[in-house]
Image: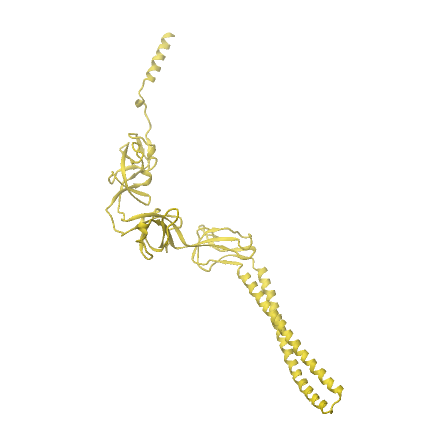
Length: 393
C-alpha cells in the first residue's frame, strides 16, 4: 500500500513539473488576405455621405379609405403592391382613395350648376318679355299724359295707364333680381364644383418625378386623413455629396469645378461630380464651409446613405501602393500610437509594424509589406506573435 502511494506521488509531481511549451495547442483558424498593388488618384480627400437629388413625402389631402395601391411584378413573378426599392415613372398613380363619395359630390354640384344656369336663362327670357311690355306701357302712358293734359282723357283712364306702366316696370326690376340671384347661385355652384373636382383629383397620389420608393406607410383598406403621409419618394438619377472644408481650401473651390468621387462600397470605380454650391459662410461650430457636389447616377450604382470620398486637386495617377483590407490593421502592442499587421509565414503568425499611407474605400495603403504577403484579415488583434495558425477559406 505504501509502495502504491509513493508511485502515485511521483506521477503527480512529474505532471506538475511539465513545461507549458510541452502541452500541445491546436492551431488557431484564421482568414487571410494577400497584399495587392493599387494605383490611387492623388489629391486631398474628404469624406461625405451621399444624399438623393430630391426627396419628398407624399401625403393625402383628403380623407377616405385606400382602395388601390400601384401593383408591380415581384421577384416570384406574382403581382404585389409597390414597396421599398421599387422604381416608379413620373406621373404614375401610387395609391387612390375610394372615389365614389367624391364623385357623388361632383355630380350633385354639377346638377346644382345646371339648375342655376337654367334659372338664369329663364330669368333673362322673363326680362326680355318684361322690357317689351314696359316699353309699350311707357308709350301708352306718355300718350295718356298728353291727352289728360289736353283734357281729352278722364282721370280714371289716366290712372289706369299709369298703373299699367308701374306694373311693367316692377316686372323688369323683378326679372333683374332673378337674374342676379341665378348668377350668384351659378357662381357659387361653379366654386363648389371646382372644390369638389379638386377633392376628386386629390383622391389619387402620383409620382412627381422618376424615382424610387423608400418608405410606404399605407395599406389597402387604411383609413387616412388629410396630411397622412403615404410614401417617401426619392430621385436618384443624380446624388449629392456634401462635405466640409477649411477656409484654406474653400477659396479654390467654385461652382462648376469637377471632382473625383469614390464610394467605399465600390472601391474599384471612380465617379466624376460637379460642384453645385459652396457655402457663403462657415459653420459656427466646425468652422468648415459646406460644399455640395452633384454626381450623375443614371444607372443607379450610387445609393443615398453610402459613404463617399472626394479627391480635391488635380486628379493624376500615382505610383501603385500595397494595400490590405482595413480589418487587417491592428494597433501595435509596443506602441499605442503605431499600427501593425499579422502576417502568416507557413503556419506561424508574425506581428509586423507598418506605416499607414492612405485610405481607399475599404482598403488601406501601407509601408512595410510587399505584394504577395499574406496577412490575417479578421481577428488579428487576438493572435499572438509566434502563434500557430491554420488558414481556412
